[in-house]
Image (tube, rainbow, N blue to C red):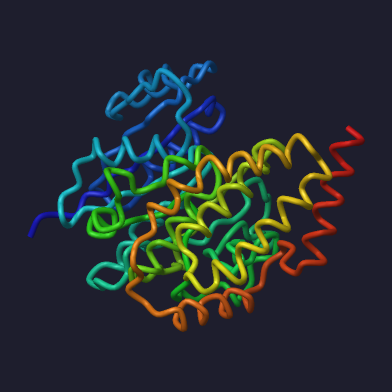
Length: 341
C-alpha cells in the first residue's frame, strides 16, 4: 500500500525570526514521508531568501502581494496534488513541533473515516520549565453566537489535558487534514474562505466541517509550541466581521433569524463607540454578506446535534472571556488601552 505523505504548507509574511526553529522542528520529525512547501506573501525581511538558501528541498512559491492566510494555503493545497491517502498540515511559521507531533496525529486518526482533521496540544512558546507550561489551545469550541474559544487558553497544562478526545475543531496553527476532508469541503477550489484575509478562517472551516458530519480529534500526545502575535485593533475588527460572515454561512436558519441577526445588529451598534472601526465592521458585513449567503450548504447533521456541541463548548475551560459581562469588560479594557496609547 502506498505510504501516506504529509504535505506541510507554510504561509510566510516577514517571518524570518521564526523560520530556523520551525524548519529545525520539521527536520526532526520522526514521521519520514514529508514534503514541504512555502508560499511567501511578498515579505521584505528576507524570508524567501532564507528558505531558498537554507532549505533548498522546499518548494517555494512567491506571491507578488500579501494575499493572506486563506488564499496562501489554498494555493499550497492545490500545488500539493494530494493523493487519496495523503495529509496536509497547515503550519504557522511561529510553531515549533516536538519530534513525534506528526507521528502521534497520524496514529490517532488513521483508519477512522469519520475523523477528517486533527490538532495537537499547543503550548505557549518561551516557557523555561515544563512544569510552567501554559496552554495556547487544546482544540476549538464554538458558541451559538459564532464566538470561538481555545480550550485551555492561558491555563496551566494539567492532567485534564493529558487525554486525547474529540473536540469541536482545530486552530489553524498546526492542523492536520485528510485529503478526503479537503476534497469534500472545498468550494470552487477554496478550502479556506478567501474572504477571510486573516483570522476566523479556521473556525469557519470547523463549523462547515461539523455541518457536513466530520469529526475533529484533539491529540494530547502531539505537542507543539506556538508564539502567536496578538491582533492589532484594526485586524481585530476584521476578526469580528469574519465571525459574523461565518455565522451567516453556517448558522441554522432558525438561529440565524431569531438569535444571530439581532446579535449582529446589536454588536454593530455597540461598536459605533469607536466610529471608524464600527463603520468598517458594518461595511465589511454589508459588502460580503451576499457572497456568504450563497456559500451556505445543506447540513448533514441536525440542529439538535449542533446545539449539543454548543453546550459542550460552553462547558470547556478557557482563560478567554466567555460571558457577555466579561467580554464587555475585555472590550472596554482593550478600548481604554488603545485610546491611552
